[in-house]
Image (cartoon, rainbow, N blue to C red):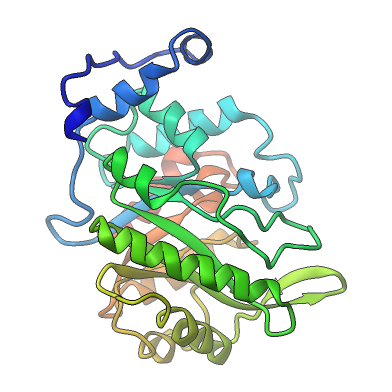
Length: 300
């Protein structure tokens, strides 16, 4: 980023109207905002991480629980993200470039951990859903904007040839991120179609097998982290890897049960924290700050 270090900074924009105006009249403001942003290392202090996730919309996944259009409004999502990021216990965010650019213009990413999202090509419900190609951030852009790493969704369907394309692209991205010294966060599943819909196998043995398959991709694992679901027998699941692991939140029907499961799993040695999206951003009572505070208390 040395070539951008002398660019003038862009003051944080306070309204969404100003964001749109900047995008139309001064698109270079986005690059200036990234160049001026105060960054931080992925881990510091106690080494734990509390990350809020918001990369679902780019895959066409807008539902939360029984609300099929919950994530339709971008400004509402940004409001929720800003509330979450305002909690000092939240270390950062995982999102696609469009959302991250809005947040950096809003001044919401100062001294925050930032993960980009790489493969969003496997649109929810598409015939090609398992052929999950890199349509989002690249390793080069993640490095250019001084982010901490990038995340990939890695669903392995043994009966779908699109899986091989996904694995090949993810392996290449692992190497490219490692070349920049950036974290490659892999979210593995064994998946299949049930009545035409993709379902992830959340049995302990299936999660274990998915870990072994995906932690072996790329020519180095030096910068590879796992992003794993909380399932039964987590002690046995976590014995499948020595890689630093963040627990994902998913879209649980019972948040209280989810919080209890996270708390138990967070005590395992290789678990470093949480990456949670819909459970915190769209809680049943719409108290984003309260849901975030509960999650932070588990991590810290």
